[in-house]
Each structure stands twice: as C-alpha cells, then as structure tokens.
Image (tube, rainbow, N blue to C red; front, side, top):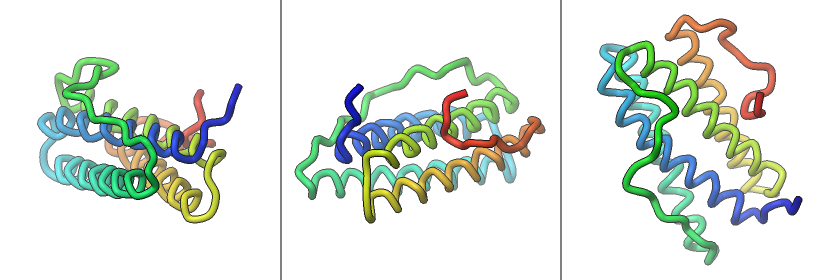
Length: 145
C-alpha cells in the first residue's frame, strides 16, 4: 500500500477537522455548564486547525478538500451521555488522522501533526473523565483498536 504524500495526509486531517466541527455543533446543544464551555473551546480549537490547514495547503498549491454540508454521525445524539460519547469519538477519530499524518510528514509539518495528536488525545481523556468512562486514557492515542 502506498504511503500518502504529506499534502494528502494533511488534506485527510483537514477533512477530519471539518467533520469534528460539524459534530461539535450537535454535541454542544446537549450539554450545559462547564461541559458546554469545553465543547465550545474544542470546536474553536478544531476551527483554528482547519483555518491554518486551509491556508497551509493553499499556499503549498496542494489540493484543499471541500467541506461538506453535513456528516453522518456514528449514533444519534439525544442526551448528555450520547453527546459526551460523541465528543470522545470525535477526538479519537481526529487524532487518528493526525497520527497517520506523522508517517508522511517531516519538519514543521510533523511537529504540527504531533501537536494535534497530543492535543486531541488529551481532550479525549478529559471527555472520558467528564463522561465517567473507564479507563480514562488509552495506551496509544489515535491508533485503531
């Protein structure tokens, strides 16, 4: 199997960022208080990464994948518990795309991928803790189970 180029790996990470932003729109409305604030902060972080990637890929003359009008969620988000489960899954899935980008990138791009992987792994742990899930951490963030 061919390893994707750095541009392709970053484009895949951008698509994951789009999906994360969409999901947080569904997550935030089912939360309140500190959890809702955390969801807004998470969405803002994904938006910042999305914006930076769009500029980065455009500047490098790489293909910038388009955002879609909507994304399929893995399960219905109907209450606080399902919103928290989705928040964990969003962070894990996005971390997996950034983990995959590590193999295709070097230098500053690799540093960027590692920073995103760590950020999303930490956020997934916080969501697991908020949801009362055990264990709160995973051994290898971003790695398929």
